[in-house]
Structure formats: C-alpha cells, structure tokens
Amino acid sequence: MNVLRKYLMEQLEKAEKDIDTKQQWRAGYHLMPPVGWLNDPNGLCMYQGEYHVFFQYSPFDVEGGLKFWGHYKSKDMIHWDYVGVPLFSDQPFDMHGVYSGCALVEKEKMYLYYTGNVKLEGDFDYINTGRESYTVFVESDDGIHFKDKECIMTQKDYGEGLTLHVRDPKVWKEEQYYMVLGARTKEDKGVVLLYASEDKKHWKFQNTITTEQKFGYMWECPDLFSLDGQRILSVSPQGLKAEQRNYQNIHQSGYFLLQGDMTGKYTLENFKEWDRGFDFYAPQTFLDEKGRRILIAWAGIPDEKGYTNPTIKDGWQHMLTMPRELKWKNGKIYQVPVEEFQQLRGEQIEVKNHMLVYPSFELEYQNKSGESFFVEIEKDIKIAFNKEQQYFEISFKGEIGAGRKSRSVSLKQCDKMTLFVDQSILEIYINDGEEVFCTRFYPQNSKIMLYYHCNIKNCKLWNTKSYSIRRNFV
Image (tube, rainbow, N blue to C red; front, side, top):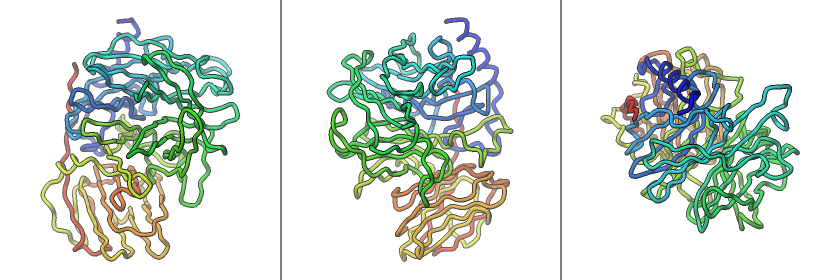
C-alpha cells in the first residue's frame, strides 16, 4: 500500500467515524453518501448473485472535492451494505479524481474501468490546456478487493480534433469487447468515441458517434445498449438551450435511437429525456441475472446555481435514484421501479381528502376518467395534470423546494400516476413510466399533509418502510 493511499484511508476513517443516520432528510431507501458529497453512479453490475453500485464520492467536501469511488452491494436492491471505498485518488494518473466509469463481469471476475483525472497547476483553461484524462483498468476476484490499477489509454489514444475533455468509459461484450467514451471536440461539439478490443486492455478506435448538427458542447456518461433489438445511445449532453417544456435543466440526460451500424454508417434519432424533474443526471444501465435492463442515475445535477440542498448544513449532499427497469414499448422506453420495491409497502391506508402522512409513502392514482387532477403536499408542492392544455407539471412555492420552481412535460393523457416519496426525494411515474420526474424537496415536519383534488376512490396509499444502510467493511 502506498503512503498516499494509507493517508487517505486514515482520513476517510475519521470522516466516516460518527455518522448521524437519523438526520432529518436522510432517505429511507435511496442510496446516499455516508458523509460529504455523492454524484454519478459507477460500475453498476450484478456479480455472484449480488447487485453492486459504486458511486462518485467526495467524503472530505460536501460541495464535491477530491473524488473516490464508494461502494454499496445488495441481494435485492432494497437492503444495502456499504462496504467502503475501493478506489482512491492515489496514483499519478488519477491524483485529482477517480472519475466515472463502469464494470464488466466475466468468468467469476469483476473488471472496473474509469477516468483518471489530472489537473495541472498554472494559467490554463482546462478545456484545451492543463488537463490530462486517462482510462484506467482494475480487476477483482471477489468484487470487494481490487488489484493494482493499470493505465490503458492516454490522451494520444483519443485521436485528433478533441479537447482534453474525454471521459466516462462504458464497456460491454458482444462478439468482441466495446468501449464508448464521452468527449468534446475543439469545435465544442459533443461526441461519443467507440473502441473495440480482443483482450479488454488494448483498444482500437472504431467510430465517432454524434448528430449531424451540434447538440450540446459535451456528451458525458455515454451508455450504448440494446433493448428488444433496438440499439440505444444514452448520453448526458451539456449546453442545450431550453425549448418550451424540453431541456429545462442546466444539463440534460437522454437517449437516441441508434439506427444502422455503430461501427460504420448510422443515424441517431428521436432524442428523449430520461427524466423531467429537477434532480437527474449521469444515468447508467446494466443487465441483471433476470435479464432486466436496469437504470440508476444521480438524483442531482452539476453546475446548478438556481436551487440547492439544505442537507449541506448536515455535512452531506445528494443521493441516487431508485433502480428502474427499462421496457421497450410503442417505439420508446418506459421506466418503472424494479418490482422489489413492492416489498416496501406497509399496510394500505384509507385515503381521505386531507390527511397527515409520514414523509415516506407510495401513492397510486388511476385516472379512469382521463380528466385534469392535482395533488398537493403541504400546499407548497403541486403535482398536476392539465387535460385541456395537455401537460403534466410539478411546481413549488416557499422554502420546501430550496429554490426549485417548476418542471413540466407535454402530455396528451394521464391514465395513471405513481408517486414515491422518501423523506426528501420524490419520484413520479406517469402512465407506467412513459414520463418520469425525480426531484428533491425538504419538508419541515415529521408528518406532511396531503391534499387530493381527484377522485380518491381511485387512489391507493401505502406508508413505506425505511432501511438503514448497514456498514460492512471487509
């Protein structure tokens, strides 16, 4: 163990020593950082019967400083063990951050790929000068303990015409191994770089995947997969301008349909945002042993200045979304919480027009008439479908949204709405996942008041259970 790694481990132990898991807004079943800052989910996979979620973790800075990878594992995506930090920023090629990446599981081994970030000291713009981005490989025989890191790609391997912003490897296997990297060209155009390999370590460039017209200046967190035979390219483009009800956040996350040959001639069609809420970015998907394509994202967003998270005062910030199963239907992707979340339901509660509930519940509304309706939380959050103007909206007033105001989506009909509330985060699934909203919020009381402006006979309500994250250092 090198001296720097030993020092960082000692500092981490001090930072995580006295964690208060009963703070006001800590969630019951969404994954959070033990302390400090969390952002992108990384290395999502299923390995030897367990789900593994790694995540960007800055334990020393609640605003997001030096980044490591934290690690959770679970047998059912409900009960999670926090198993510590497997990857520290302790090498010359990742000294300023173990950035985002992925996992590949094969023949009883787990392989991790990530971007090692280096920022030079000096008068640089850190776009075309002053930054180094390395692709790093590390393997494990048990999914917990990892061998020495290997730097397998440097800036010269990424080709001409690019800025120094190349990152976020996603690797998978078909007839050979493939890797995609997100990148920014010198013309400030977002692209994805495609590579192929026979041995997981030596990579050859195959293609640049992008749109004909510029669609944002940087594409982060690429993910290329198939769903019922349709190739999907998921990216997080930065620099899109808002268009009516689309692209309302500072940065977006969505997917294209990739038609044609990804290594040759192709087209990208029908970009659609994954989520319409305030807090969603950097999604990543994986296949589990049941054959389900599952998506998890960061329930947050980078560079946002208009709203915030009051948990900063408690020494932690951000969480991950619920795991969502992806289903291909009607030419697009539907997202639903994995079925395991039904285990969280307590006894069904009788619905009344106005009622106090604990801030962890599931509400299902079947809008059989197809009419306009809305539900309010504390009179400060309004969740509404407007049939006449054909849109669905969540809006805030007062301090409960910590600066959040309104997000909406054009919607011709709303037959069903399912709302999951977990202390300080809510996720809304419309028409069985045709549209989804993920948003943080901050109630002041131990119980919150629900107001129904809909047919309560068509509502089902459950309090949901909370599970404390177990600490299982190994």
